[in-house]
Length: 110
Image 1 (cartoon, one colour):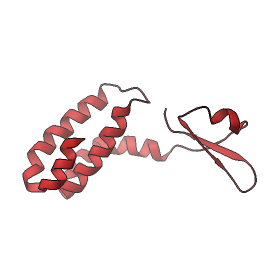
Image 2 (cartoon, one colour):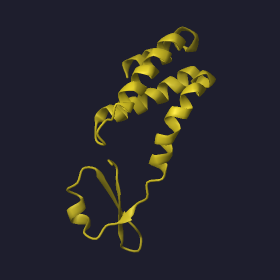
Image 3 (cartoon, rainbow, N blue to C red):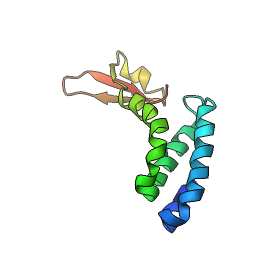
């Protein structure tokens, strides 16, 4: 994560080689099979976003690896929650109350 912040500070030309090594290490870590609630997933996601902003079009080679995970996040659908009070106990569940009085929840960990 820190490396991605440094990369944004120094710019694309200086950061390009280090970014390649960082992305390779992050992809290896992610492909090793992280638990659904492993905080490394979020750190890798945030670092990849910053590396993308730093590298601009030079980030394109990493998209085929990253896009399936992004698509999976976008496909997550909320489900109606029967007992919203019980669901508030689950830190991985975001509960929203709709205008019609129903509660829907989105589990943010898989």
